[in-house]
Length: 197
Image (cartoon, rainbow, N blue to C red):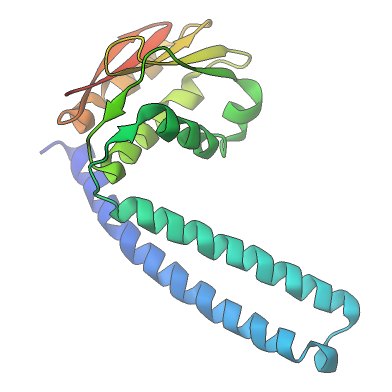
């Protein structure tokens, strides 16, 4: 088995344990803040009370995000999934990368409806791996069209500024990870992910 694939599988197996541990720690932190909040008038100034309430709100948001992430990791439902809906959500996730968010212009177009029937956790894994290699490959100021259904069953990224050879090689190396579900087609200005039926 490919060394990169083994490494990815091993790291993926650890993720559930990491999430479990994080969740426990966050629950303990939440409990301590709630206890402090219940006795806020006794121990805290009004300004500190406001900060504790904000901290509790942020903590709840983080716990909700962890729940969503765990749900995605464990979701083996085979769909059907509308690729446009999945990609809209995925782009929000990709925009955690500030370069991709602010320095790359993006346009999502659905030319033809693409409905997929693969496990959701694997679909999101494929898109996450692709995104990890794609967004640093785009040049600053690039205009990227994300085309759904340009190729039947496909997701295409077209850029006005070509990708370098090294980036294309790294993206090409992902093909072994996608084998059961998709194939990659590459050219300097275009990356296409074609899902199998």
